[in-house]
Amino acid sequence: MRAVIQRVSKASVTIGGKVHAQIGWGLLVLLGIEDADGTEDIQWLSSKIVNLRIFDDAEGVMNESVKDRNGDIILVSQFTLHAATKKGNRPSYIKASKPDVAIPLYEKMIAQLSTDLGKPIGTGQFGADMKVELLNVGPVTIWIDTKSRE
Image 1 (spheres, one colour):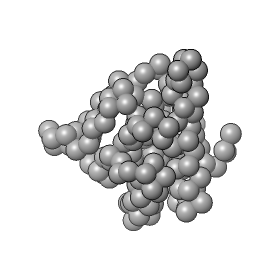
Image 2 (tube, helix red, strand yellow):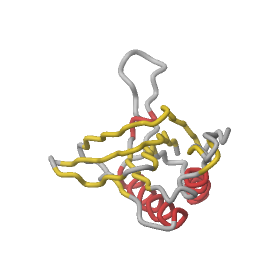
Image 3 (cartoon, helix red, strand yellow):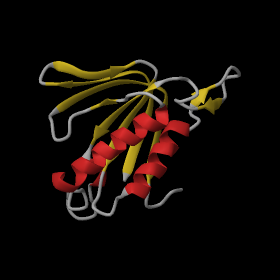
């Protein structure tokens, strides 16, 4: 799994002209899924996301997590995070899971994040044409790949 995590003061997902999910302070997480991903990746990544200390404490040091701040999360599936760009100028998405594999894993990730955060999270809609808006604070943007775990 690959995730792009952005610290936001607000974010929303609009589908078909209607707001599907919106949050104030928290995290917007874009998630790419590949066939090799499984339960261990979901558990590890979810824990990492909710406990990532990227919010300022009282001294202005990034020392608090979204969970510490009682913040919110929006999770959006994004197969393009697995784009291969080595050859030519047209990205290949062969590493990205097809819906029959990706949807169940995406749904498990939603459930795991909700459990780990202690409240429901906002989501996009798998496969939909979504308009994602955000106000990135910092900016703080972090990329995590469960296969490299750096």
